[in-house]
Amino acid sequence: MQSGFGSKAGLPTVRIGIVLLTMIIATGSAFGQGIVTGSISGTVMDQQGAVVRNATVTATSVNTNTQTSTTSNDVGYFSFRSMPIGSYDITIEAPNFNKYQAKGVVVAVSKDTVLSEIRLGVGSTETVAVSGEFPLIETSTPQLTTVFDERKVKDLPLGNGFDQLANFVPGVVSPGGVGFGNNMGAQIVANGQRSRSNNFQIDGQANNDNSVTGPSLGVVNADSISEFQLITNFTAEYGRNSGAQVNIITKSGTNQLHGTASYNNRSHTFDSLTRQEKKSGLTRPPRDIQNLYGASLGGPVYKDKMWFFGSTYWVKVRQG
Image 1 (cartoon, rainbow, N blue to C red):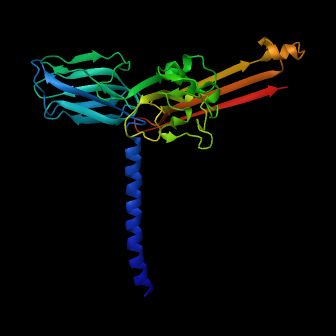
Image 2: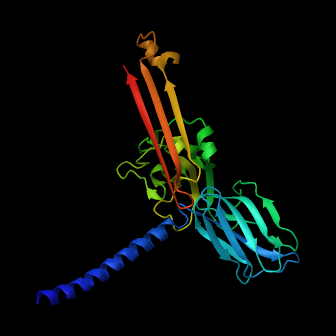
Image 3: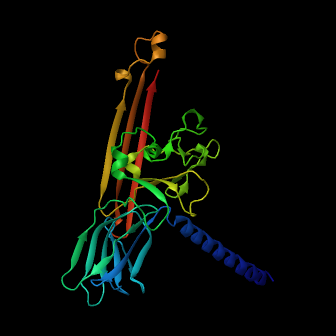
């Protein structure tokens, strides 16, 4: 009796487990579509403008050497979806045509990098160098997306809180004294909505302070950020808020071992007195010393297969 009961009870349990696992995987794939990844698309044609069907298209990551392949359809169109951000080399091959290569194709979060009409010729291999810049106008989506890549994140003098990059985007302003949110990052108003109408994400995961709105976690280490993005007109996969989508994408490891170290110091020594401090009789600024230490390290665990990346940031403040 016990053995029979155990077998009957075990089967539904296994089925339930399989269903739940399938739902989790499906939910993760749906949520990740376009939120932490981008895409590449294009149309393959011959020199006379006729479409080339069943051409083999391969995208190779410059950083990790991973490859993804697809084929052009009946109208010569191909598309790579859910591609991790970074630079790719595109190779196109078709019978009776020369090989076509496009190097340095950049993929950004939620952007479709559209290659112009690709015309295959006959003869030697043709190699095209792509500028590596994001297109100003997106023809495949109604989204209005502004991307700040790794270099801009590092070079712009923002201090702490990289959500402040949002203030460089047209249509985004500061709410002033009516922000009603925390100051872990930027308090912004987008599309004429309230400052509470913005959605903050880190690597596609919610970063919202549910009590007073605004970002729950302020990211201050520039060496950990691969891309900062703000979307002011977005499609259905985002939802939740009607203002803007603020996305921070962190770095990942590559085939090359690399790391960074940084130190910043701020001292009251070179500060001037405020008007209120002068009225209170102070002769020098109050003590305020900040020491900021940062470091990061990334590289291969197993080349072309597995990678690692980590970062740390320490803030030491002395006041009095």
